[in-house]
Image (cartoon, rainbow, N blue to C red; front, side, top):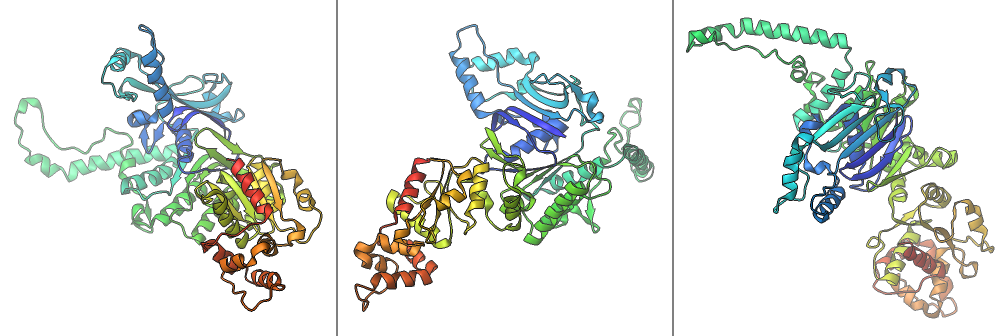
Length: 553
């Protein structure tokens, strides 16, 4: 079981530490926040491979963190003559649980933390044999400011200090990437590798021997007549012939293709491929993968299929022994809600993660979001500035009010306005668990006590950080009378903005008539206001919330 991951200077991550949960880990974040890179880095340290190729074959200048490279060249060019700053290096370390007896041969203190633990590290640094060439490159006048990886080496070791050449037999991983439709070879590689990794070593050896035997027979039979026709140019050089290649002990692995219902795996629909890879990793009797990576399971799957896939994940977590450690990246609120917010890790642009333990959010609230699987929870999680409102009309009015006050749309300023109904407490609790800034707007529902609603959620509020804004009861108990009250000095302006004709209505009755209309047609009037070119006035609690949000930037 992975207990800690340390990454330095690998792509988006300059200095990064990640402590995963036992069992399930749901990783979310904005685009380019490093979700996929994190999974890639963990898998790289465990297997020595990235995208099916060994690290030494895949190494390129873009592995290095851009800021680290920039800082290095600035230091290099400013350094006094004769001095030389150390070139940047990449480090990925994966720390494993100490109590696992199968991993003890990989245990030691050869890691950056000097911890006595089993684990693996992958390091990329300057090759001493190429130091002179690197120095010449660095001094050149027309030098491109990237790291010439031709002069660098990849060191893959365990914490005992042993250099690794192939994936340790004690480590089994499965990587399921549903983000893109890949070429046939790439699609087949992952499925094929997952199946092959599950084979018993004795079965693998038997297949390899039988494969060699088949190649030999093919040479002796099918190629015999061809070889007889080959003319020897020089008898003294020996007999020239065509033979099946038997030099690679694992050559059979590249020659087999997964099939599904007698069709090549790559010819199945992509959604079906995703499902089958998940089943292979989690449900087959031969499943041995202790570390499973699933990239965006929602891609290429219908709602029903996605539900089935998540059921497979949940079943594996509850029934499989030993319990696998699963890492899932997602942009889907359904995935997050269904599998559990208490397993969440929020990734912030490669710098840190925001996560909370099982006590940070109540069991009731956790169950609420699981039952409300269609609610867009990720909007609460990812928003830079957040406003929670009760209903659609509140949302439309707030957005319009914000634009009238600031001259910008909420989207322009990165403000997300989320409708959560009367269960605003649930969203506020989640925001508190994630230490999110948020403004909460709600109706007073005719309650005179100014602090009544705040007291109900006081444990989640924090002045200047998480605040609730409630309209004054004297101005009405819901949004509609509050809007009418705010525009009482010129009620005709509001009526015009929402397309309501007040002609024939007495001055005395205008407020009441307009309030009744707006109350009965909440969505209609708020939509018309949102689209109107006429500017109106807004209740004080809405204006206060706008000011709060603006200060939160």
